[in-house]
Length: 192
Length: 192
Image 1 (cartoon, rainbow over the protein chains, first blue to last red):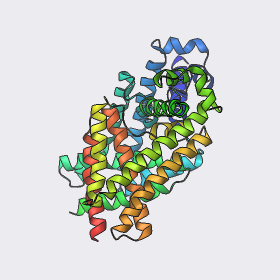
Image 2: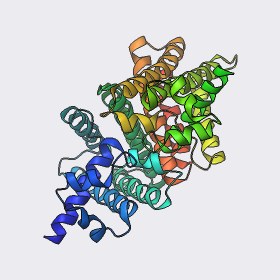
Image 3: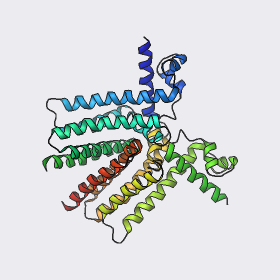
Image 4: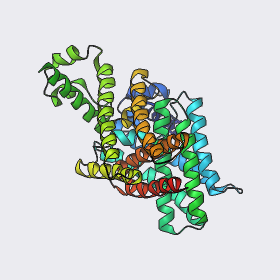
């Protein structure tokens, strides 16, 4: 039950940070969205909003890392096909959510990059974990390790930026167009 | 003098939004940073923070649009070289500023995409204006109009995402690596 409340607070935080950022999300809003009593927040997160932020970032990051691993692990999975699938998952999530359900990390990352080292570090760890999943898969498909790492960084950058443009435009075209170009680039790299 | 105060408020807002986002920036912080009396804010921006936000986004957007136009207009400018230059400008700005001086629009765009239509719209207009500058230049280098528009969107997405990753990591590697891959993709597209 205690763990359940803690989990609900993390889930609510993750969703609100993803939709409206860290600074714009109040602790009262988090406890209300998590259906948790006010006192529970400081009970589970004695470090307050920053501790909750760090744990919510890690929580979302781990969930998406599992999603990436699962997608790549499918028996029929071709690496370029998987990358297209990630872009498509984001297209679907943005349309379904009224443009709220983008990257769970990027908004906070941009807000805190020069203002909170604990939060900034949590975001950097998540991005690094996602890049590592993708880099391993590209290396498994035959690329040299350094090349695989560089292309993983590039593909994640293109993905994150396409989410920024699609959310701003309320239009999934940036994600769809970017997916095509990135898929082409990766196909060439794997063939060459 | 009045225009001067107005301009200083816009400049201060643009800088603070870029560094720490919209929600995390208070009006008192803006007037202090702009060296403006408190009352001047509502004098120049009767619509308050949202009006100031919309105008600051447009103000920054127009400044960067001119920078993009100027870079592309250089007599010796090769389009792929210019794209590399934009990535390098961002590398330099991030290192010089302690990771604060990234994209003037992206943080706000992610914060407000599903919460403020006036701000969201201002961000979308800016991104569209930047894409248009780049698309015209790619079309001028020989690409069909639709292909030029798609590659412009892709290049901007990769650029924006690389800034997210570099700011989070406090490391310019994502910008440098992504610049190389994007330059390669554009070179192939122009050759093919």
